[in-house]
Length: 427
Image (cartoon, rainbow, N blue to C red; front, side, top):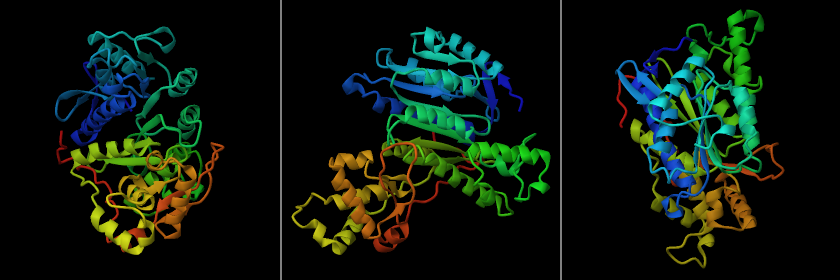
């Protein structure tokens, strides 16, 4: 797909697409950095990095409004250089861009802003550029042995091959859902079923003999997207496009759960009939809740707010024995973990090593027994299978929403609804 430029900005369209997306990422970058750097109270002393794997030019030109705005890489650099330099001294920005034209304009944007840059191994400015394809850039990044809290933003035109994502994840996440690494991933959901320009949509049949040559290429790309072929029987059929788009999102989340405890797909509609998702991936529930809050604020999606008091009352009536010896306002651990799962855990997923559980109870055995009790009372269901990546093995659970909603008379969280192209997002 040919790229267009307005001065040094890459030309894109959509207030409800690019403009909304980059504003959410800008806010997320800032709050993420403030938290992971140790914040002002700790002199921002922790090493952090933002890795833009498809940096483009650092600026975007919104065609239908005539605005030039910072792209995600531009916001990362603004975070680095728009603050007191001493505060962001330990923040490293790494920008990867393969396209020759984009890389040229990116360097011009940096030059115009009066900043220095260079390759990782030759530069101490903490702003580093790679003019390389993603595979080569990943190999280079894996050679850097320093440990930093890091966000990796993958923002390709269509999708990322799964083997490349796994290569980054494997180099960073070395123990059971280790924190300190987050992914943000772009996926152009509707293109797989509608096609665009020279990209053919997926066929609607499993019969390979009926596929055109262009459809074969798209199927091969989808195999690379997932890293397997199990997806085919669920997406290569005549079901509605809406159903297949949601299945694609669900399958992709399942893939990402191999490395991340929490995955949040945020939907965007840049143009009529188009749909893409940003997947926020973290092993710490706070990161997911922050991203979700920024999205809800700008898209008028309501926050999930079930009644704590009413739910607690019903829980206490059913399980008076767990409250014995506990004086108000203290609460039993069984209730506290259940409420955290209901209110804060995306998809209701949990395990004994969740960081917010550890804050409530340091003893692993007690956390395991508490989750086992919640499962015995039908509040949780076991997630079968073990993760092959790490030696540590812990039982994962998912909230039994049918039982929870029936017992406590609360609704499960609503599906996030994207802003339509005719609407305007909140700033």
